[in-house]
Length: 265
Image (cartoon, rainbow, N blue to C red):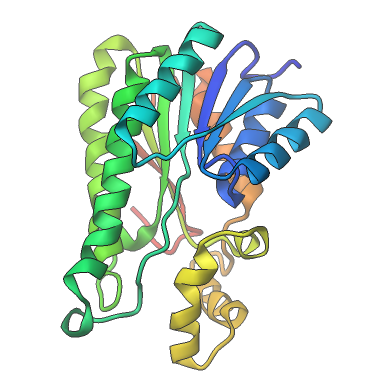
């Protein structure tokens, strides 16, 4: 398959999920050989089948992104099979508590997103960086919450801010090798709710507390953006293809703002 990622090798963590699956399909459509990693075999197999049905190349492995040995072993195996890695995208997500103010937030609830998001990003970066070829890109997705005031998002806020800081630091460390880092900062993506995303479990308690459906809550979020709309999966995936491509060769330590103007830099 020809495309702007033809001949490239892409590794997508959380590749069976709504966002990871969309990114993996876009990478494959752009010509990349794609390796998907996630915990559940059934959804991984379905994601690979969807890519193959469109004429793309994809393989999948079950990997727990919180397990250091598993993450390193998998990255080594992908690099050995493919001869190297050109793009890594981390879309692994974790259910966590939102909508709870500091006074009621337990230490465990605060620590869970901080520990899991930072641990997984650290492990993925460390394992994949050894195999990323010059011109390669280390990418992830974050939310606007790193720049938001509370109440109700404390653990997720610190987690996203930490991921952005990690990627910014790694831009300087990996840059001399020609390896780039990019965060895609997205607002909520309504399409993910129908595709098994953990976002439903995160958003539902907030919607219930407000006496709204999730759909109504997200419509309110859309109205709070400059563009009066929320981003779509195709827009996220297309931005990931761009960030991985030679067209973004001068981009590193960067955040692509996909918040529909909810945040304006």
